[in-house]
Length: 134
Image (cartoon, rainbow, N blue to C red):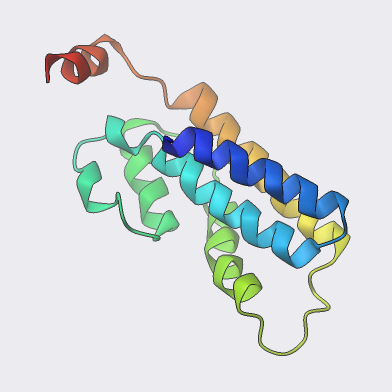
């Protein structure tokens, strides 16, 4: 399974968890989906190998932006995704912050990142030639 398909599946799981009222786990899956969507186009950028197994979504996004500048700045959304990926998986103390509204916000973050990947990180003919030359 490729990163994009995996991201889509994890996003669908986040939506399902949201609908069933499991907001903390919906947020966790949303954060993972953001990482996977970003990694799905990483191979189009020189030096991608450095980030392939990284969970540093902030630098993965910055690396993608070198070639594919985003129309809107996703840094805040991606930073929240990095923060709450670990915090939602391993909550310490009060879990009251994981509300329906907070989980909805993360689903919207995923939609924005996916839009960036789908609409702005577009391969060109050179990318195709490189892929099939190997």
